[in-house]
Picture 1: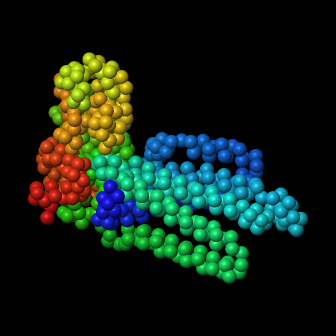
Picture 2: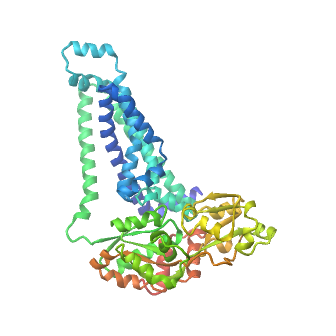
Picture 3: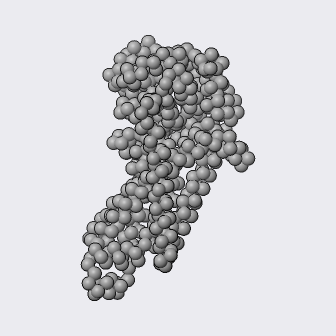
Length: 514
Protein backbone atom coordinates (compact mmCIF):
# COMPACT_ATOMS: atom_id res chain seq x y z
CA UNK A 1 0.00 0.00 0.00
CA UNK A 2 2.84 2.41 0.85
CA UNK A 3 4.43 1.74 -2.54
CA UNK A 4 1.11 2.45 -4.29
CA UNK A 5 0.71 5.66 -2.29
CA UNK A 6 4.17 7.01 -3.19
CA UNK A 7 3.72 5.96 -6.83
CA UNK A 8 0.44 7.90 -6.87
CA UNK A 9 2.11 10.97 -5.36
CA UNK A 10 4.81 10.81 -8.05
CA UNK A 11 2.55 10.20 -11.05
CA UNK A 12 -0.18 12.64 -9.95
CA UNK A 13 2.18 15.29 -8.62
CA UNK A 14 0.38 18.23 -10.25
CA UNK A 15 -2.97 17.07 -8.85
CA UNK A 16 -1.68 16.82 -5.28
CA UNK A 17 0.36 20.03 -5.48
CA UNK A 18 -2.77 21.90 -6.58
CA UNK A 19 -4.77 20.47 -3.68
CA UNK A 20 -1.94 21.24 -1.26
CA UNK A 21 -1.86 24.89 -2.34
CA UNK A 22 -5.65 25.15 -1.96
CA UNK A 23 -5.38 23.59 1.49
CA UNK A 24 -2.70 26.06 2.54
CA UNK A 25 -4.73 29.00 1.21
CA UNK A 26 -7.95 28.02 3.02
CA UNK A 27 -6.11 27.23 6.26
CA UNK A 28 -3.94 30.34 6.34
CA UNK A 29 -6.81 32.71 5.62
CA UNK A 30 -8.82 31.14 8.45
CA UNK A 31 -5.82 31.24 10.80
CA UNK A 32 -5.06 34.89 10.01
CA UNK A 33 -8.66 35.96 10.66
CA UNK A 34 -8.80 33.93 13.89
CA UNK A 35 -5.54 35.43 15.16
CA UNK A 36 -6.81 38.98 14.60
CA UNK A 37 -10.40 38.49 15.80
CA UNK A 38 -9.53 36.05 18.58
CA UNK A 39 -6.58 38.13 19.72
CA UNK A 40 -8.65 41.30 19.96
CA UNK A 41 -11.47 39.43 21.76
CA UNK A 42 -8.97 37.92 24.22
CA UNK A 43 -7.48 41.33 24.97
CA UNK A 44 -10.89 42.95 25.48
CA UNK A 45 -12.18 40.32 27.90
CA UNK A 46 -8.88 40.54 29.78
CA UNK A 47 -9.38 44.28 30.18
CA UNK A 48 -13.08 43.96 30.99
CA UNK A 49 -13.32 40.84 33.14
CA UNK A 50 -17.12 40.93 33.40
CA UNK A 51 -17.30 40.03 29.72
CA UNK A 52 -14.91 37.08 30.06
CA UNK A 53 -17.34 34.40 31.24
CA UNK A 54 -20.14 35.03 28.70
CA UNK A 55 -17.65 35.45 25.84
CA UNK A 56 -15.82 32.21 26.61
CA UNK A 57 -19.16 30.44 27.10
CA UNK A 58 -20.33 31.47 23.61
CA UNK A 59 -17.02 30.48 22.01
CA UNK A 60 -17.09 27.15 23.87
CA UNK A 61 -20.62 26.49 22.66
CA UNK A 62 -19.68 27.14 19.02
CA UNK A 63 -16.70 24.82 19.42
CA UNK A 64 -18.96 21.92 20.47
CA UNK A 65 -21.07 22.06 17.28
CA UNK A 66 -20.08 19.16 14.98
CA UNK A 67 -18.20 20.41 11.92
CA UNK A 68 -20.64 18.93 9.40
CA UNK A 69 -23.55 20.56 11.24
CA UNK A 70 -21.72 23.88 11.20
CA UNK A 71 -21.16 23.62 7.44
CA UNK A 72 -24.79 22.70 6.85
CA UNK A 73 -25.93 25.68 8.92
CA UNK A 74 -23.69 28.12 7.05
CA UNK A 75 -24.50 27.00 3.49
CA UNK A 76 -27.86 28.84 3.23
CA UNK A 77 -26.09 32.09 4.19
CA UNK A 78 -22.71 31.86 2.45
CA UNK A 79 -23.25 29.14 -0.16
CA UNK A 80 -20.84 26.34 -0.94
CA UNK A 81 -17.14 26.68 -1.58
CA UNK A 82 -14.12 28.29 0.03
CA UNK A 83 -15.94 31.17 1.76
CA UNK A 84 -18.08 28.86 3.90
CA UNK A 85 -15.08 26.67 4.68
CA UNK A 86 -13.09 29.70 5.85
CA UNK A 87 -15.96 30.92 8.06
CA UNK A 88 -16.37 27.50 9.69
CA UNK A 89 -12.64 27.01 10.25
CA UNK A 90 -12.33 30.50 11.72
CA UNK A 91 -15.14 29.80 14.19
CA UNK A 92 -13.41 26.63 15.40
CA UNK A 93 -10.04 28.42 15.60
CA UNK A 94 -11.39 31.19 17.82
CA UNK A 95 -11.59 29.16 21.04
CA UNK A 96 -7.87 28.32 21.44
CA UNK A 97 -6.94 31.85 20.32
CA UNK A 98 -9.31 33.69 22.67
CA UNK A 99 -8.53 31.40 25.58
CA UNK A 100 -4.74 31.57 25.13
CA UNK A 101 -4.76 35.37 24.86
CA UNK A 102 -7.02 35.77 27.89
CA UNK A 103 -5.06 33.26 29.98
CA UNK A 104 -1.69 34.75 29.05
CA UNK A 105 -2.66 38.32 29.87
CA UNK A 106 -4.56 37.62 33.11
CA UNK A 107 -1.75 35.47 34.52
CA UNK A 108 0.91 38.19 34.37
CA UNK A 109 2.40 38.71 37.83
CA UNK A 110 0.39 41.52 39.57
CA UNK A 111 3.57 42.92 41.16
CA UNK A 112 5.02 43.58 37.73
CA UNK A 113 1.87 45.42 36.70
CA UNK A 114 1.94 47.41 39.91
CA UNK A 115 5.55 48.42 39.20
CA UNK A 116 4.61 49.49 35.66
CA UNK A 117 1.77 51.65 36.93
CA UNK A 118 4.03 53.09 39.65
CA UNK A 119 6.44 54.25 36.95
CA UNK A 120 3.62 56.27 35.36
CA UNK A 121 2.55 53.80 32.67
CA UNK A 122 -0.94 54.32 31.29
CA UNK A 123 -3.38 51.43 30.85
CA UNK A 124 -2.58 51.18 27.14
CA UNK A 125 1.18 51.41 27.71
CA UNK A 126 1.00 48.71 30.37
CA UNK A 127 -0.96 46.47 28.01
CA UNK A 128 1.31 46.94 24.98
CA UNK A 129 4.69 47.09 26.71
CA UNK A 130 4.23 44.76 29.67
CA UNK A 131 1.20 42.48 29.62
CA UNK A 132 1.27 41.40 25.95
CA UNK A 133 5.06 40.78 25.80
CA UNK A 134 4.89 38.69 28.99
CA UNK A 135 1.81 36.82 27.75
CA UNK A 136 3.39 36.09 24.37
CA UNK A 137 4.69 32.57 25.19
CA UNK A 138 1.19 31.46 26.24
CA UNK A 139 -0.36 33.14 23.20
CA UNK A 140 2.16 31.49 20.85
CA UNK A 141 1.40 28.10 22.38
CA UNK A 142 -2.30 28.69 21.71
CA UNK A 143 -1.57 29.76 18.14
CA UNK A 144 0.48 26.61 17.49
CA UNK A 145 -2.32 24.37 18.77
CA UNK A 146 -4.89 26.32 16.79
CA UNK A 147 -2.87 26.13 13.55
CA UNK A 148 -2.38 22.35 13.74
CA UNK A 149 -6.08 21.85 14.50
CA UNK A 150 -7.17 24.14 11.65
CA UNK A 151 -4.96 22.45 9.05
CA UNK A 152 -6.29 19.04 10.07
CA UNK A 153 -9.92 20.20 10.17
CA UNK A 154 -9.64 21.87 6.75
CA UNK A 155 -9.90 18.39 5.22
CA UNK A 156 -13.66 18.52 5.75
CA UNK A 157 -13.91 21.54 3.44
CA UNK A 158 -14.26 19.25 0.43
CA UNK A 159 -17.67 18.19 1.74
CA UNK A 160 -19.10 21.53 0.63
CA UNK A 161 -17.20 21.92 -2.63
CA UNK A 162 -14.16 23.77 -1.29
CA UNK A 163 -10.67 22.75 -2.33
CA UNK A 164 -7.84 21.26 -0.33
CA UNK A 165 -6.45 17.82 0.40
CA UNK A 166 -9.82 16.65 1.71
CA UNK A 167 -10.76 16.27 -1.97
CA UNK A 168 -8.20 13.47 -2.30
CA UNK A 169 -9.36 11.80 0.92
CA UNK A 170 -13.06 11.93 0.03
CA UNK A 171 -12.47 10.94 -3.57
CA UNK A 172 -10.32 8.01 -2.46
CA UNK A 173 -13.06 6.75 -0.15
CA UNK A 174 -15.74 7.17 -2.83
CA UNK A 175 -13.78 5.41 -5.59
CA UNK A 176 -12.34 2.67 -3.35
CA UNK A 177 -8.81 4.06 -3.83
CA UNK A 178 -7.09 3.57 -0.46
CA UNK A 179 -3.77 4.88 -1.80
CA UNK A 180 -5.34 8.24 -2.65
CA UNK A 181 -7.00 8.48 0.77
CA UNK A 182 -3.70 7.73 2.50
CA UNK A 183 -1.79 10.19 0.30
CA UNK A 184 -4.19 13.02 1.13
CA UNK A 185 -4.05 12.19 4.84
CA UNK A 186 -0.26 12.00 4.83
CA UNK A 187 0.10 15.38 3.14
CA UNK A 188 -2.21 17.02 5.68
CA UNK A 189 -0.17 15.53 8.54
CA UNK A 190 3.13 16.63 6.99
CA UNK A 191 1.79 20.14 6.33
CA UNK A 192 0.63 20.47 9.95
CA UNK A 193 4.02 19.32 11.27
CA UNK A 194 5.95 21.65 8.95
CA UNK A 195 3.87 24.68 9.93
CA UNK A 196 4.18 23.76 13.62
CA UNK A 197 7.99 23.55 13.20
CA UNK A 198 8.07 26.97 11.53
CA UNK A 199 5.99 28.49 14.34
CA UNK A 200 8.28 26.86 16.89
CA UNK A 201 11.23 28.52 15.17
CA UNK A 202 9.41 31.88 15.22
CA UNK A 203 8.61 31.44 18.93
CA UNK A 204 12.25 30.70 19.67
CA UNK A 205 13.45 33.74 17.72
CA UNK A 206 10.96 35.99 19.50
CA UNK A 207 12.48 34.96 22.82
CA UNK A 208 15.88 36.31 21.81
CA UNK A 209 16.42 39.81 23.19
CA UNK A 210 19.87 40.83 21.92
CA UNK A 211 20.20 43.68 19.42
CA UNK A 212 21.66 41.35 16.77
CA UNK A 213 18.77 38.91 17.23
CA UNK A 214 16.21 41.70 16.94
CA UNK A 215 17.80 42.92 13.68
CA UNK A 216 17.71 39.38 12.30
CA UNK A 217 14.09 38.98 13.39
CA UNK A 218 13.12 42.16 11.57
CA UNK A 219 14.82 40.97 8.38
CA UNK A 220 13.10 37.58 8.63
CA UNK A 221 9.72 39.26 9.22
CA UNK A 222 10.18 41.52 6.17
CA UNK A 223 11.25 38.53 4.07
CA UNK A 224 8.21 36.52 5.19
CA UNK A 225 5.85 39.41 4.36
CA UNK A 226 7.42 39.83 0.92
CA UNK A 227 7.11 36.09 0.24
CA UNK A 228 3.44 36.12 1.30
CA UNK A 229 2.80 39.14 -0.92
CA UNK A 230 4.42 37.48 -3.93
CA UNK A 231 2.47 34.27 -3.34
CA UNK A 232 -0.81 36.21 -3.06
CA UNK A 233 -0.04 38.13 -6.25
CA UNK A 234 0.74 34.92 -8.13
CA UNK A 235 -2.59 33.48 -7.00
CA UNK A 236 -4.70 36.54 -7.83
CA UNK A 237 -3.14 38.26 -10.83
CA UNK A 238 -3.58 35.46 -13.45
CA UNK A 239 -7.36 35.58 -13.04
CA UNK A 240 -7.36 39.37 -13.46
CA UNK A 241 -5.39 39.49 -16.68
CA UNK A 242 -7.36 41.16 -19.49
CA UNK A 243 -8.61 38.69 -22.06
CA UNK A 244 -8.38 35.70 -19.71
CA UNK A 245 -10.92 33.04 -20.79
CA UNK A 246 -14.20 32.81 -18.92
CA UNK A 247 -14.50 29.91 -16.48
CA UNK A 248 -17.38 27.44 -16.31
CA UNK A 249 -17.79 26.03 -12.80
CA UNK A 250 -18.83 22.38 -12.98
CA UNK A 251 -19.93 20.48 -9.86
CA UNK A 252 -20.24 16.74 -9.35
CA UNK A 253 -21.80 14.58 -6.67
CA UNK A 254 -19.64 12.20 -4.58
CA UNK A 255 -20.06 9.28 -6.98
CA UNK A 256 -17.57 7.60 -9.30
CA UNK A 257 -19.69 8.08 -12.40
CA UNK A 258 -20.09 11.77 -11.59
CA UNK A 259 -16.31 12.16 -11.38
CA UNK A 260 -16.10 10.56 -14.82
CA UNK A 261 -18.80 12.79 -16.32
CA UNK A 262 -17.27 15.89 -14.76
CA UNK A 263 -14.03 15.16 -16.57
CA UNK A 264 -15.89 14.45 -19.81
CA UNK A 265 -17.48 17.89 -19.58
CA UNK A 266 -14.14 19.54 -18.86
CA UNK A 267 -12.37 17.85 -21.79
CA UNK A 268 -15.12 18.53 -24.32
CA UNK A 269 -15.80 22.14 -23.33
CA UNK A 270 -12.12 23.09 -23.30
CA UNK A 271 -11.54 21.33 -26.64
CA UNK A 272 -14.51 22.84 -28.50
CA UNK A 273 -14.62 26.35 -26.98
CA UNK A 274 -12.35 29.04 -25.58
CA UNK A 275 -13.82 28.51 -22.12
CA UNK A 276 -11.91 27.20 -19.13
CA UNK A 277 -13.53 24.66 -16.82
CA UNK A 278 -13.12 24.30 -13.08
CA UNK A 279 -14.50 21.02 -11.73
CA UNK A 280 -15.52 20.86 -8.07
CA UNK A 281 -15.64 17.15 -7.40
CA UNK A 282 -17.66 15.26 -4.85
CA UNK A 283 -19.79 17.99 -3.26
CA UNK A 284 -21.23 16.47 -0.09
CA UNK A 285 -24.99 15.75 0.03
CA UNK A 286 -25.11 16.03 -3.76
CA UNK A 287 -28.25 17.76 -5.04
CA UNK A 288 -29.07 19.23 -1.61
CA UNK A 289 -25.98 21.45 -1.77
CA UNK A 290 -25.33 21.73 -5.51
CA UNK A 291 -28.76 22.89 -6.72
CA UNK A 292 -29.00 25.91 -4.36
CA UNK A 293 -25.45 26.81 -5.40
CA UNK A 294 -26.55 26.65 -9.05
CA UNK A 295 -29.38 29.10 -8.36
CA UNK A 296 -27.00 31.47 -6.56
CA UNK A 297 -24.42 31.28 -9.36
CA UNK A 298 -21.68 29.48 -7.43
CA UNK A 299 -21.88 26.60 -9.94
CA UNK A 300 -22.84 26.75 -13.62
CA UNK A 301 -23.32 23.14 -14.65
CA UNK A 302 -23.64 19.66 -13.17
CA UNK A 303 -24.87 16.16 -14.13
CA UNK A 304 -28.24 15.34 -12.55
CA UNK A 305 -30.89 12.61 -12.66
CA UNK A 306 -34.47 13.30 -13.69
CA UNK A 307 -36.16 11.47 -10.81
CA UNK A 308 -33.95 13.29 -8.32
CA UNK A 309 -34.79 16.65 -9.86
CA UNK A 310 -38.50 15.86 -9.76
CA UNK A 311 -38.55 14.85 -6.08
CA UNK A 312 -35.77 16.87 -4.46
CA UNK A 313 -35.70 20.09 -6.50
CA UNK A 314 -39.30 20.53 -7.62
CA UNK A 315 -40.69 18.72 -4.54
CA UNK A 316 -43.19 16.80 -6.66
CA UNK A 317 -45.03 13.79 -5.28
CA UNK A 318 -45.73 10.50 -6.99
CA UNK A 319 -43.46 8.32 -9.08
CA UNK A 320 -41.70 10.21 -11.86
CA UNK A 321 -41.76 8.88 -15.42
CA UNK A 322 -39.99 10.28 -18.46
CA UNK A 323 -43.40 11.24 -19.90
CA UNK A 324 -43.25 14.12 -17.41
CA UNK A 325 -39.89 15.43 -18.65
CA UNK A 326 -41.59 18.48 -20.17
CA UNK A 327 -43.02 19.42 -16.77
CA UNK A 328 -39.60 18.86 -15.22
CA UNK A 329 -37.93 21.24 -17.66
CA UNK A 330 -40.65 23.84 -17.16
CA UNK A 331 -40.15 23.71 -13.39
CA UNK A 332 -36.41 24.17 -13.82
CA UNK A 333 -36.88 27.11 -16.21
CA UNK A 334 -38.63 29.00 -13.41
CA UNK A 335 -35.44 28.59 -11.38
CA UNK A 336 -33.24 29.87 -14.22
CA UNK A 337 -31.96 26.38 -15.05
CA UNK A 338 -32.23 24.09 -18.06
CA UNK A 339 -31.57 20.49 -19.06
CA UNK A 340 -29.16 20.13 -22.01
CA UNK A 341 -27.42 16.93 -23.09
CA UNK A 342 -29.10 13.70 -21.93
CA UNK A 343 -26.39 11.05 -21.70
CA UNK A 344 -28.60 8.10 -22.60
CA UNK A 345 -28.31 6.00 -19.45
CA UNK A 346 -30.44 5.80 -16.34
CA UNK A 347 -29.17 5.16 -12.85
CA UNK A 348 -32.10 4.22 -10.71
CA UNK A 349 -32.16 2.90 -7.18
CA UNK A 350 -32.45 -0.76 -6.36
CA UNK A 351 -32.17 -3.10 -3.41
CA UNK A 352 -29.52 -5.80 -3.16
CA UNK A 353 -29.43 -8.45 -0.45
CA UNK A 354 -26.38 -10.47 0.56
CA UNK A 355 -26.61 -13.74 -1.37
CA UNK A 356 -26.65 -15.99 1.69
CA UNK A 357 -29.49 -13.94 3.19
CA UNK A 358 -31.48 -14.09 -0.06
CA UNK A 359 -31.03 -17.87 -0.17
CA UNK A 360 -31.87 -18.37 3.52
CA UNK A 361 -35.20 -16.51 3.27
CA UNK A 362 -36.01 -17.16 -0.40
CA UNK A 363 -36.00 -13.46 -1.27
CA UNK A 364 -36.44 -12.53 -4.93
CA UNK A 365 -38.66 -9.42 -4.86
CA UNK A 366 -39.21 -6.40 -2.66
CA UNK A 367 -42.44 -8.00 -1.44
CA UNK A 368 -40.48 -11.08 -0.36
CA UNK A 369 -38.05 -8.82 1.45
CA UNK A 370 -40.85 -7.01 3.29
CA UNK A 371 -41.81 -10.25 5.06
CA UNK A 372 -38.43 -10.54 6.82
CA UNK A 373 -37.14 -6.94 7.12
CA UNK A 374 -37.62 -6.94 10.90
CA UNK A 375 -34.71 -9.43 11.06
CA UNK A 376 -32.43 -7.48 8.72
CA UNK A 377 -30.21 -4.40 8.72
CA UNK A 378 -30.35 -1.97 5.78
CA UNK A 379 -27.47 0.24 4.64
CA UNK A 380 -27.86 3.37 2.46
CA UNK A 381 -26.38 6.80 1.78
CA UNK A 382 -27.43 9.67 4.02
CA UNK A 383 -29.63 11.41 1.46
CA UNK A 384 -31.74 8.28 0.84
CA UNK A 385 -33.06 8.47 4.40
CA UNK A 386 -34.15 12.10 3.84
CA UNK A 387 -35.58 12.00 0.32
CA UNK A 388 -39.33 12.28 -0.22
CA UNK A 389 -39.02 9.22 -2.49
CA UNK A 390 -36.55 7.49 -0.17
CA UNK A 391 -36.58 5.28 2.90
CA UNK A 392 -39.90 6.26 4.52
CA UNK A 393 -41.80 6.13 1.23
CA UNK A 394 -40.25 2.74 0.35
CA UNK A 395 -41.21 1.27 3.72
CA UNK A 396 -44.76 2.62 3.40
CA UNK A 397 -45.20 1.30 -0.15
CA UNK A 398 -44.11 -2.25 0.74
CA UNK A 399 -45.04 -2.37 4.42
CA UNK A 400 -41.40 -2.81 5.43
CA UNK A 401 -39.98 -2.40 8.92
CA UNK A 402 -36.24 -3.02 9.05
CA UNK A 403 -34.75 -4.16 12.32
CA UNK A 404 -32.11 -1.43 12.04
CA UNK A 405 -30.46 0.84 9.50
CA UNK A 406 -26.93 2.11 8.90
CA UNK A 407 -25.89 5.31 7.12
CA UNK A 408 -23.00 4.53 4.77
CA UNK A 409 -20.73 6.45 2.44
CA UNK A 410 -21.22 5.39 -1.16
CA UNK A 411 -17.65 4.08 -1.40
CA UNK A 412 -18.00 1.81 1.65
CA UNK A 413 -21.39 0.17 1.23
CA UNK A 414 -20.27 -2.96 -0.63
CA UNK A 415 -17.51 -3.52 1.92
CA UNK A 416 -20.13 -3.29 4.67
CA UNK A 417 -22.27 -5.89 2.87
CA UNK A 418 -19.31 -8.22 2.35
CA UNK A 419 -18.26 -7.93 6.00
CA UNK A 420 -21.78 -8.66 7.25
CA UNK A 421 -22.27 -5.22 8.81
CA UNK A 422 -25.52 -4.92 6.83
CA UNK A 423 -27.80 -7.50 5.22
CA UNK A 424 -29.32 -5.33 2.48
CA UNK A 425 -28.22 -2.28 0.52
CA UNK A 426 -29.77 0.51 -1.45
CA UNK A 427 -27.80 0.34 -4.68
CA UNK A 428 -27.52 2.17 -7.99
CA UNK A 429 -28.00 0.17 -11.17
CA UNK A 430 -24.68 1.42 -12.60
CA UNK A 431 -22.58 0.55 -9.54
CA UNK A 432 -19.23 -0.76 -10.74
CA UNK A 433 -18.94 -3.28 -7.89
CA UNK A 434 -22.43 -4.68 -8.36
CA UNK A 435 -21.55 -7.35 -10.93
CA UNK A 436 -18.78 -8.74 -8.71
CA UNK A 437 -20.48 -8.36 -5.32
CA UNK A 438 -21.80 -11.21 -3.19
CA UNK A 439 -25.29 -9.82 -3.64
CA UNK A 440 -28.66 -10.62 -5.18
CA UNK A 441 -30.49 -7.72 -6.84
CA UNK A 442 -34.20 -7.88 -6.08
CA UNK A 443 -37.12 -7.13 -8.37
CA UNK A 444 -39.11 -3.94 -7.70
CA UNK A 445 -42.42 -5.78 -8.21
CA UNK A 446 -44.58 -2.72 -7.44
CA UNK A 447 -42.50 -0.32 -9.55
CA UNK A 448 -41.70 1.93 -6.59
CA UNK A 449 -38.50 3.57 -7.82
CA UNK A 450 -38.97 6.22 -10.52
CA UNK A 451 -36.91 6.78 -13.67
CA UNK A 452 -33.54 8.45 -13.16
CA UNK A 453 -32.24 9.40 -16.59
CA UNK A 454 -28.98 11.33 -16.46
CA UNK A 455 -28.49 14.73 -18.10
CA UNK A 456 -26.80 18.08 -17.59
CA UNK A 457 -28.40 20.90 -15.65
CA UNK A 458 -27.00 24.29 -16.69
CA UNK A 459 -27.77 27.87 -15.72
CA UNK A 460 -29.85 29.65 -18.39
CA UNK A 461 -27.78 32.81 -17.95
CA UNK A 462 -24.59 30.90 -18.75
CA UNK A 463 -26.13 29.50 -21.95
CA UNK A 464 -27.11 33.03 -22.97
CA UNK A 465 -23.60 34.35 -22.29
CA UNK A 466 -21.90 31.39 -23.99
CA UNK A 467 -24.27 29.95 -26.63
CA UNK A 468 -21.46 27.73 -27.95
CA UNK A 469 -21.82 25.69 -24.75
CA UNK A 470 -25.18 24.28 -25.84
CA UNK A 471 -23.71 22.59 -28.92
CA UNK A 472 -20.99 20.95 -26.81
CA UNK A 473 -23.48 19.58 -24.28
CA UNK A 474 -25.77 18.31 -27.06
CA UNK A 475 -22.87 16.19 -28.32
CA UNK A 476 -23.35 14.00 -25.24
CA UNK A 477 -26.93 13.05 -26.17
CA UNK A 478 -27.27 9.26 -26.17
CA UNK A 479 -23.55 8.57 -25.87
CA UNK A 480 -23.55 6.30 -22.79
CA UNK A 481 -25.54 3.17 -21.95
CA UNK A 482 -26.05 1.69 -18.49
CA UNK A 483 -23.57 -1.10 -19.23
CA UNK A 484 -21.04 1.48 -20.49
CA UNK A 485 -21.35 3.45 -17.26
CA UNK A 486 -21.14 0.36 -15.07
CA UNK A 487 -18.00 -0.71 -16.92
CA UNK A 488 -16.37 2.70 -16.50
CA UNK A 489 -17.25 2.72 -12.80
CA UNK A 490 -15.66 -0.72 -12.48
CA UNK A 491 -12.48 0.50 -14.17
CA UNK A 492 -12.12 3.22 -11.54
CA UNK A 493 -13.33 1.41 -8.43
CA UNK A 494 -11.82 -2.04 -8.98
CA UNK A 495 -8.97 -1.59 -11.45
CA UNK A 496 -7.71 1.61 -9.86
CA UNK A 497 -7.78 3.72 -13.03
CA UNK A 498 -8.16 7.50 -12.78
CA UNK A 499 -11.58 8.98 -13.64
CA UNK A 500 -9.79 11.51 -15.88
CA UNK A 501 -8.19 8.73 -17.95
CA UNK A 502 -11.36 6.65 -18.14
CA UNK A 503 -13.39 9.67 -19.29
CA UNK A 504 -10.83 10.65 -21.91
CA UNK A 505 -10.51 7.10 -23.23
CA UNK A 506 -14.27 6.74 -23.62
CA UNK A 507 -14.69 10.07 -25.42
CA UNK A 508 -11.90 9.17 -27.83
CA UNK A 509 -13.48 5.79 -28.52
CA UNK A 510 -16.72 7.63 -29.37
CA UNK A 511 -14.86 10.03 -31.68
CA UNK A 512 -15.75 13.07 -29.55
CA UNK A 513 -12.25 13.87 -28.34
CA UNK A 514 -9.23 14.38 -30.53
